Structures are given as C-alpha cells and as structure tokens.
Image (cartoon, rainbow, N blue to C red):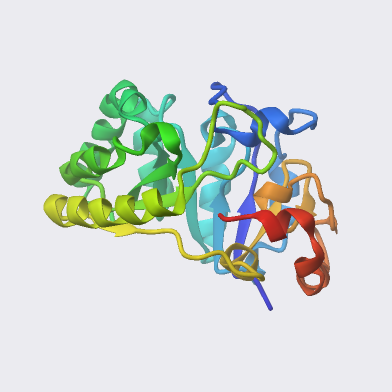
Length: 269
C-alpha cells in the first residue's frame, strides 16, 4: 500500500485555539519546518503535497516558496486554512504561487461570518485572475453545529466549488463539552445536506464508513514540522522515524499492524 499524498505540517503554531481542535491535546514543541528540510523530503515520490497539520500554514513565512517549489517539480499542492490571515496580499500570493486547492475550515455560522469577507475576497481574486484553483469549505460535524451545516452549505453558492464534511475526531476528549452526533442524527443530517447541496449547486463530499485500513492511511502519510513521519495527523506523536528516506516501508509496517492499534480501532473519521 503506497500513499500518494504527503501531508506536510509546516508548523504546529496557530493564531486560534478552537475547542474542536486536537492541537491542545498534543504535547509537542511548537516550531516551523525549514525550507531546506522541506526540499529534502521525498516530494517527487508523491502526487500531491497537502499543507495540512496542527497549525495555520499562513503563519509560515516561506509557505509560498514551498508551494512554488513543489509546483516546479510537477506536484499538485493543496492547503487548509482558518482564513483569518487571508488578506488581499496573501490571497494574490496564493493564487500566483500555483496552488491547486484551498480548503477553509468552517465549523459554525459564527465562524463563517467572521471570516466571510476574507473568503469572498479570495473567490473574487480567483475570478479576476481566471485561476483554476479549487475552493472548498471543510466542515467538522459535531453536536453543536448539527442544525447549521445545511445553512453553511447554502451560503457556499457564492463561489465555493465543493463542501467536504468529516466527523469530529474526539477520541482524546480534548474538550469534554464537545460530542459527536448519534448514528440516527448523522443519517438525517446527510439527507438535509444533500438537499442543501443541490439547492446551492455545490458538490458535497460526505464521510464514508470507517474501515481498517482507513482511506486516510491508504492514500496519505503525515510529516510533522520537525520532519518526523507519522501514520496520520491524528497519530502525530506516534513517530515511525524520520521522513527523509524509506517512507513507504515505514508506512507499510504500521499499516500491517493497524488493526491492533487502539486509536485506529476506535476511530470513526
């Protein structure tokens, strides 16, 4: 099993402290991946570099250089951001860097309202530049936003290409007040979500049933800012070794024992 996406955590630093985020649980030093170390990663062995991790990638001063470097060797690039730092200059820089996909982490109407202008400006810049970059809303499902998700999807009609829904990962119980929904509630939500997507003319990607090995580990492997290889972002403290060589062999060894892993057995993501 050979992953095709390298998820690179450029930093685990963040300007927010969202209660649904596992970042607060992690007992790791805060740092930033150097551009030199980024270039040493086996980037050309993957089809996509996803700038995803437990931090805000727009905080990294060399993000745009890293995107351009990956594009220069023919690799697809994507990132997820909370959009709070996405001013006009950064929007223009992201588009000119050649970034292929951007996802905005939105988990409530309140969050969307605070960041809407930045996202709208990015959509406008894309249209003005006639850029091909794909724009997504990335929504974490949990009990408190159950009724808001269809409304957020309908808002996406202003220029969002698709909406990605995923289940709350809360095995570590970072915030005791944050809970996932019941199986019945999930089924009802998915019905509403499909209707909202059709109404807005926006494609909606629903989470699939969790299996072992899961689709995340099948297609992705995760590298922390200090270049340690881990099976996925939810196991970002389970180091398989450095991420500079023998990446696929290290990843495969974990996959073979995945059914024995306590977190993987309990995961619904």
